[in-house]
Length: 173
Ligand SMILES: *[C@@H]1O[C@H](CO)[C@@H](O)[C@H](O)[C@H]1NC(C)=O
Ligand SMILES: *[C@@H]1O[C@H](CO)[C@@H](O)[C@H](O)[C@H]1NC(C)=O
Ligand SMILES: *[C@@H]1O[C@H](CO)[C@@H](O)[C@H](O)[C@H]1NC(C)=O
Ligand SMILES: *[C@@H]1O[C@H](CO)[C@@H](O)[C@H](O)[C@H]1NC(C)=O
Ligand SMILES: [Cu+2]
Image (cartoon, rainbow, N blue to C red):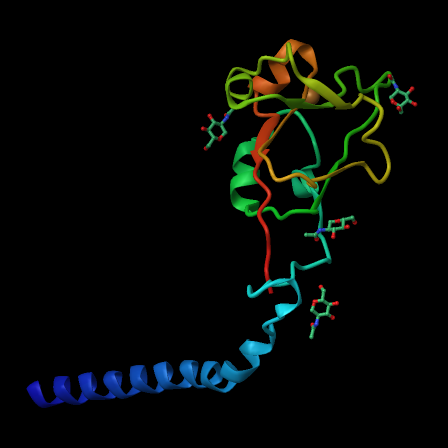
């Protein structure tokens, strides 16, 4: 019994060792390639990593789009991080006979108004009909926190979960 245990432990150890060596090997091989962000002294003696130019297009809420009864803070948390120049797409139906509670997109000025869903100093970035078709596009092109909320029903939509904030990050090679 003791012998079996020892053998078992031994084979586990060998397996783990193999895994570790196996996973570190590609890194070792990649080593020199990782240095292909060259030192460029044109702009001074600093190394400038080049920011990625390609940006993403992210539909807010995924297949749920921008709707009532969905928790966008949770969505933002599970889809973070967001990057500089990412485009957020808000998709929502315009007002109609069958859609009497349409949505909109507002930017709240600070964390306090965001927490309280205080729309008094909010800036409307999309009205109730701008979410049709391909949706309303908003590019995160400033390095600042963005506080998004639906501005309809006097803050009730916002309080019910139609709000989230993102802080775009810089992405380097
Ligand atoms: C170094 O940077 C300058 C200015 O950004 C650029 O014109 C030049 O092509 C760069 N050189 C290399 C080797 O990347
Ligand atoms: C962001 O997009 C603008 C306009 O397309 C571009 O000029 C800029 O280089 C981009 N910045 C980054 C960090 O990708
Ligand atoms: C919403 O904004 C668009 C574009 O600015 C405008 O054409 C449209 O008339 C506006 N709709 C409403 C309901 O305010
Ligand atoms: C949304 O989810 C967050 C995080 O789980 C929670 O703190 C918040 O109360 C939720 N909002 C609503 C309106 O349920
Ligand atoms: Cu709404």
